[in-house]
Image 1: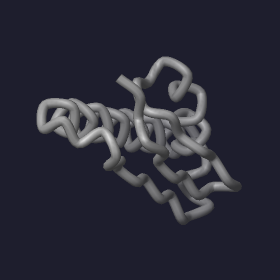
Image 2 (image 1 turned 30 degrees about the vertical axis):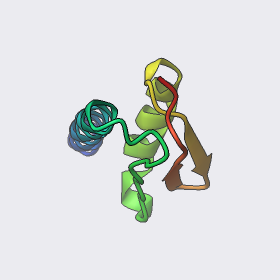
Image 3 (image 1 turned 180 degrees about the vertical axis):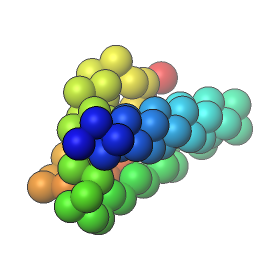
Length: 77
């Protein structure tokens, strides 16, 4: 179980870093109407989805969490 959680946390961290990078690039290009989409579609990644959901409050991108599917919403500056 520890390995499962560790892998999920690493997946979540990598996903969040990629999301932050995408948002920075979109900001630099002044493409505020465009948003990255993260779709987690596997029950084995529920811990990752939970981690991402917990971090979303501090992320510059709004995320809408539905079950274990994550959709991006236009980010605010």
